[in-house]
Length: 298
Image 1: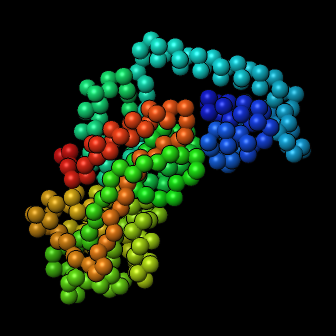
Image 2: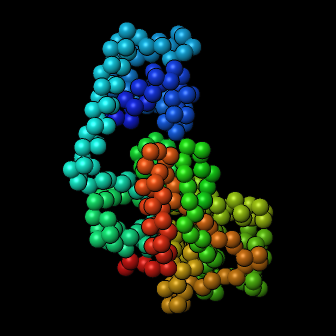
Image 3: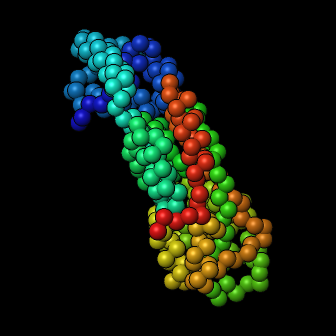
């Protein structure tokens, strides 16, 4: 197993803080994340670093020797990062977005960043909201743009957009008078992504408050594939009005008015609290200015 700087950072923090709980607070991580990093470090180094028979984080003899080397390595890594910026090297930003963002505003954002911020280099991850959020907590991503969800205290977040959504169907599939009462949707198949999707989780929670429990006839993690199934008449879906405009204008799907109307879904930029807060605040501002879910890149 490969040893990472994140594991060494957690190790040094636990030793200096005296407890896993205090180390997690200083690093703005969850205690479970710190514990996992220590376990991974012990597995990778094949050394028992802590004497777990004691209540406080007490080092073994081998752990004490390892601590001195780890502390020195972390100091050198910090110096190397400072020197790299001074020499004008590119700064890497690990960014995560959901599928809808990757199909709309993200390509234009990346193209413009080449000219506006040539010193930045983006490493992009496309995934489901809850998976991306976990990657932020595990320090595998720096910033993500995801639908509103419960955000832990270890992150900063900023609202960047409200996404208007609607119910869509293949024309002629709905037999109820319109607008259709939300409660009547229990009689229809609504195709949605699973619980790892923040978009679906948010809307599923709202539907449940109106006594609508969707029937999971299709298990799917792709929003784009969901649209294909709706066009084929396999069910209804809830999607962004702006993104679906091409399909509605061509007559392949139609908007089904509901009573009450479906609520908008708020999107947030989320990043870990760190010494680079000012940098990420500015990046959030840039993202908010360029987010446009109405424009498909193809």
